[in-house]
Length: 423
Image 1: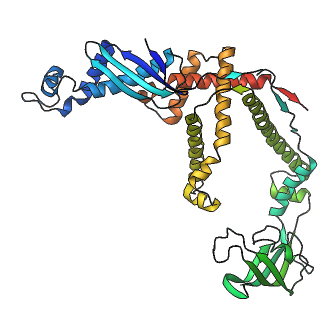
Image 2 (image 1 turned 135 degrees about the vertical axis):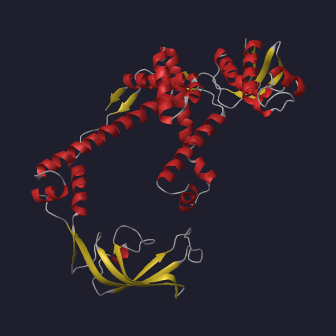
Image 3 (image 1 turned 180 degrees about the horizontal axis):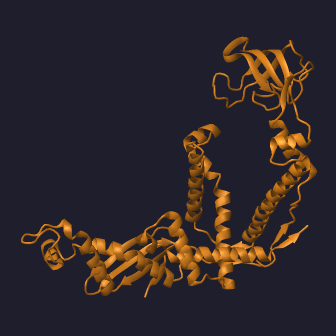
């Protein structure tokens, strides 16, 4: 029988035992695992009986591995018996151990109490229009038109969106600076690739014209000797070009798609945009419903839960960056933040995620939304498959975790199914 004692607001101390039979199973496992490590006179290596090894090396020679083998299951059994939601690694102490009486343990661990959720029926979300607008469709068509545009030279003043070729010389305190000179530089006006309002000041200039552009370097500019300083650029407009977009006709549709007519091509874009909006609607509904659920939830969260969730979110982001070929350190240098500063940006989302998960667990308990044994087995098999676990690893899966995870998913479906759409 496991016991529990409150240590502080979030920490409890468990007391639990393993009987002599289970401990003997552990000792037998430890002996078979380690017997080849002992040299006993008169016996070939690995052939000495356990009693002989214990006589030579001490009766508790196999205790450590035996206890490590039996402890996880014993701890999980105690947690389940006490209906405890542990949220940190346990600090385990061995109180006593003997072949006659088994092993007694204590474990300090942080735990969270059950959440209280008010009125989780009929949570609301705002209607999200899934039919794409004409403007949205035209914008998507214009993307294809832009990709197939011809670049032509024009004789007129510069306007936004033009591709211009320029020479420039930059000065700070009336002196040229490193990197401030370029010839035949191609620039798309309006993309804001230059500092401050450099590009805006070129609008209205004509081919062959020289103009002076006055800007200020950002305070956090990468070159410290230029940071925050005003600068003047002598700019010569050498060529002005624009994109000539193709006509929206059947020829265009055949060039950019598998369709023969423009109407077929446009209908396909409408269908794709509608699908995108339908997916967006699901995310919008989820965000609004889960946010309202969290707002109706009362629970005292141990800080370690938030910290752990932040670590998971940061690790996930780091893996995404690796997939894109960028180390986290490089990304942090790019945005000008330390790892600690960036990690802190996850705190609000991590807090909301933890609260929402605890709320769904509470809903699952109230509604009796428990997974069947078949569902737990199927999920265990799925996890083993995607993680390529062997039989031993599969046998070590925390079924209580799988149970909670599946219960949360059932509660999520329940809440979402009962949510009400409002205008």
